[in-house]
Picture 1: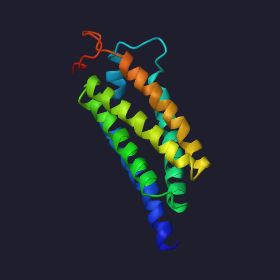
Picture 2: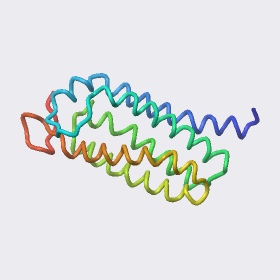
Picture 3: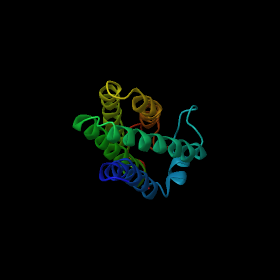
Length: 162
């Protein structure tokens, strides 16, 4: 493997695995917290999240690899890293800090960063943009869910009690 390919692998795998690891660590109590939330009828069961994120993180990593190997440019690579940083920030805000307001701000910023990344990337690599599209769909769904859930003992928008 040449140096460019090795750096590409590091770019594709490193930030994606870091976001996944942060999310995993911050969501250790997620099933308990999620179960206690006042959720809309369309909220998925807790068992859906793991398999969905496994598929999404794989697609994100492949998209990152494509961006690097096709020399998508600093803007595309920067947006890719920015959305992964926002991805990593949501789970600690929602499940660890239990601050729905902060989590909603983070996931809304994630939606914007992902939409911008897809728009920039689509000009260079339609396949990479297509790999990110389901992630944007899931993120928008997560935004709606984050906005809809509440502490059973408090008003929507409140911080979930421990």
